[in-house]
Image 1 (cartoon, rainbow, N blue to C red):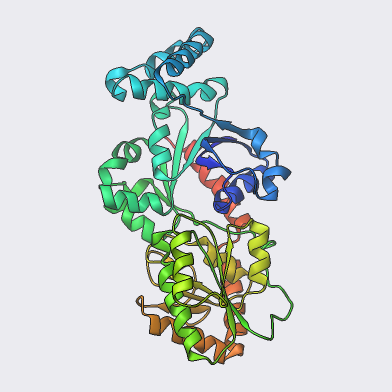
Image 2: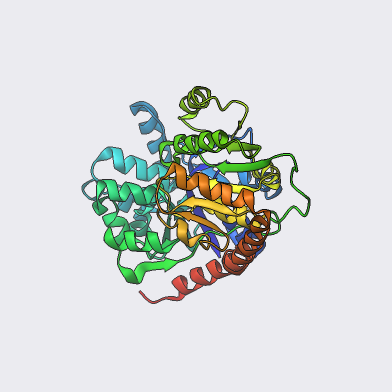
Length: 402
């Protein structure tokens, strides 16, 4: 199969779930190209980007800014492709249907690579990217169009109403939901149930596996891996760490891995709470660097107040680390409460602190919960098994009538 993956930016250090699908499909013998609206940060990339030569397989739409540049590029596309693809170009230039010359030209810029090469599947990750590309179904009705919803796109739909995805839901062949929570929201937003396919994100169990070595005997390590943004609720986590420090019963370090617009505010909060000696701000790390920090970790803490399906919880469990996380979105689907960790019923500083202490007081809990978490991920979220299932999903869509 020839598969086009459409993403917002590439490469992106945080979106390993997309990278795992791309490389997994290539390993299974499928032909995959990547289409991105923006260039990612090439200064820190996952080794797979280099190993699989993914940048050579990536096309950037590079939509021009400025009227003159846009017109010049549009003329070049028309001169180059109209003779060979007149019907596709004429369909693309439907001003009435697509809402004026701005949107028509954008579609013309986006369609160019699809005039050069035919694809069996166009798979968009995140709803807004699906909105951008679903016009391809008008131009090439034979293409099977799929979109996977994750987290922020679900929240966007709830904030702005399901109408923002109305055309997408109408024209997409299938809509992939990564968790039960997303499935319910997609239905609420107006997506037909018959189009929704459940397919969770998975992880590479060969990369994320228990360390096999003893952790630091002098102190515990609590770790959070998250973007430093409002919904990740890091300020709450720092209050929990302060309460834990004030207990004075345990020596520990709090690893905070990630970056984002709240970094300065978080640094100020650390100083205000007097946590400079307890909190280690690692910033954004590569996949391999995150794994190294997880090897040092005793307890994984995710304090978010908005989540869909946090893959990072699966990664921590795969490394036999017990979880403490807030019960929002589909977090409860990512681990088993009281078996591989503790689900917090609310954002209570006292509750979170006591759950952490419970694990610190009983190191055998850390070991047993860690083992249970590893088994849970092996049984449900092995990326190799899931990628084979994704290929079967593609084949069923291609072979489906209508």
